[in-house]
Image (cartoon, one colour):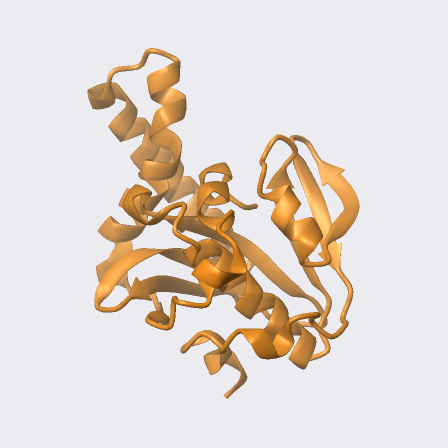
Length: 194
């Protein structure tokens, strides 16, 4: 599942994305739980605010939803990578992905609000697609039907492959990435292959 708010982070053009040489990934640890909860809450708070719920009521609900989602992802993706997105020295988001088996699964990507819309998400997606192409692995992800990031996914070669409630399953066959030489790999992305 890809968070709808991550769409803003994935709409910058390639020239902006190419400048994100300071983006790295590192494995999340138990010490990162507060940060991960903050990232999750930042992607959902607007939904509660739009419904007229006060922040002090929304925060405990979001904390509970985060715990449920976190447990679900850990159970359903036991071989998954749960990474912190780092820009320079600053933690800016999360990237959950699973390369176990014969399909690379993008589980979730989300950035803190201050880092959305700057091309970081696009840069990460390009690196993930290029990595899957190098490994000759098809990819899949779920995205909400009303999420504008679907346009980026189509540009990267993803096609609709099914649905699950409000989510569309998108798949990208194992094929060379059209712009493979254009973007350098993201440090930390290939660690699961070492």
